[in-house]
Every structure is written in C-alpha cells, then in structure tokens.
Length: 163
Image 1 (cartoon, rainbow, N blue to C red):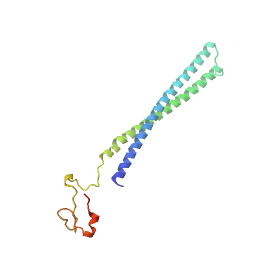
Image 2: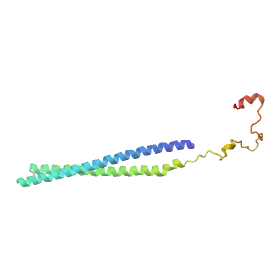
Image 3: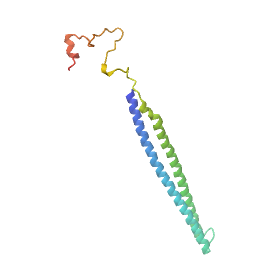
Image 4: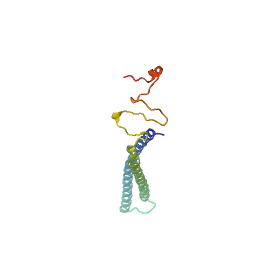
C-alpha cells in the first residue's frame, strides 16, 4: 500500500466521519424534540387526572371503583408511559451527542494527519533550475559531460528526443 492509497483511505474516512457526525446531529435534534414532546404530554395527562379527581370530589362522587377514579388512574398510567418515553429520548439524545462529539474529535485529531502527510518516495530535494541529473551507481560507466549516453546509430531513433 503506497502513500496515495493511504491518502485516499483517509479522505474516505474523513468523509464518512463527517456524514456520521451529521447523522448523529440529526438524531440529537430528533430525540431532544421528542423528549420535550413526551414530557409535555405526560404533564398534560397528569393535569387531566388531577382535574378529573377534583371534579369527582366537588360533585361528591368518590371511591376507587367509580368511573372518574378509573379515568384518573388511566390518565396517570398514560402520564407514566409518556414520562418513560421522555426518559428514553433524553438518553438517546445524550448518547447520540456523545457519538457526534467522538466523530468530531476523531476528525480534529486523527485525521489531522491527512494534512501532514509527507511524500516518502522522494529521494532528494534538488534545484529545479538544474534539471534532472543521473545518479551513477557502483560499477556503472561514467556518462559523457553533456549527460547523454552514446547510442549505437541503429538504436538512435529509440532514444531521440524531438525538440
């Protein structure tokens, strides 16, 4: 695997993390709003149950088996269910918030390496005005001063530079 492959993988990982962080943001928004909604419904159900009890008391109807008591108990159970839904959504919003922060932290720390990659396939830094120059290896014959090797006439067409 070369640097270009690693670079492409890091770019893909960064794009995926950005999408994942955005998805977690949407989930935080959804669950936060849902928690508020269910809290409100639960409070409304509790208020309705209390109103039913107050009306029953004022009208002189009392007792656990009356219709008003059953309605109030039913409203209390519904309020309890709504509160449980609100707690569930608050928990989900918190978890998605933590996951979003983890994605953002990873992008800020680990993927910062994407901007710090240095090519490793470069053998040396040279002055570009001098152009490329050959590197003589041990056992190789010296090149002529003009830098072009001598080629037999029959092969000259293979190495000829049009200019």
